[in-house]
Amino acid sequence: MDLFFGFFILTGQMFFSFLFFLHIFKALFYFSYRIKKVWASGILIFLLLIASAFIGYVLPWTEMRFWACVVITNLVRVIPYIGRRLILWIWGGFSVNNSTLGLFFVLHFILPLIIFLLIIVHLALLHETGRTSSLYCISDMDKIIFSPYFIEKDAFNLRFWARFIFLTLRFPFALGDSEMFILANPLMSPVHIVPESYFLFAYCILRSIPNKLFGVVALLIRILRFILFTLVSSYRRGLQKINLFVVFRFISTGVVLSWIGGCLVEAPFVFIGAVSSLVYFFLISLILLILSFTTILFK
Figure (cartoon, rainbow, N blue to C red):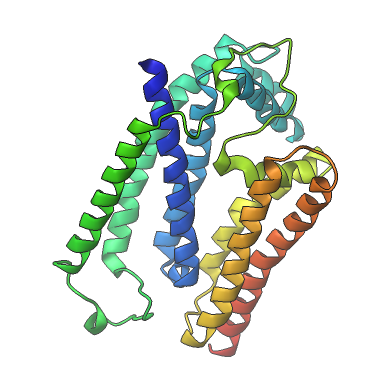
């Protein structure tokens, strides 16, 4: 029964991460970053969700998850001066052990409480300014009332989630990995380490960069660059088609990276992963460049 509910939670986590990424791409398309406080709080929630998702991923302590913990926590070593001491503190010893699992178990309870408080702050900030829309309206005269429009929208979401819960209860092992049935063995690593679907594109970027330090920096840039959108104030309607094209290519590149991240580390997947990583960073830089240019031009 515990294993059954474990897979149910795992399936729900995958689906939640998918909806969260859609929420970010929708915000990019509708220029929601012009509401700076709401955007900044959302990025902070995104960072904590990544940390909470990884910690929760490790907790079952199976073969794949144990070695994922070893690989990811070893990235802390690249921090100058304090990296080696910090990794010993995280591990609670000289290797990943039960002390590490105990620390992650405690953090997995604390982080969701912090995320819950930040979500309340996020909604409060959104309530001050109002939502963005496909019409790019910024006037209070153009906004619509909560009932019945948003009530019907939320009711549709509830019906959709109800169907999803039924499917996950009916097919709880559909998105599971066979390695989850193997207990962690520190003496033998899996032939091919594959993280969960919501970490595949980050894993592909990390393994496409041969230098560990540059790989960690690239992962940090992948997340922290979204904060730069708070410096942009443009929401010109004429940019809609350009923005749609770039965001669509951005999503497509993320899908390719996720696919390559699940493939073996061999040709031609290594080359495709490296090229896709470059395109991935180029597209987000292109979005920032276009928006910065229009902000200066129409200021």
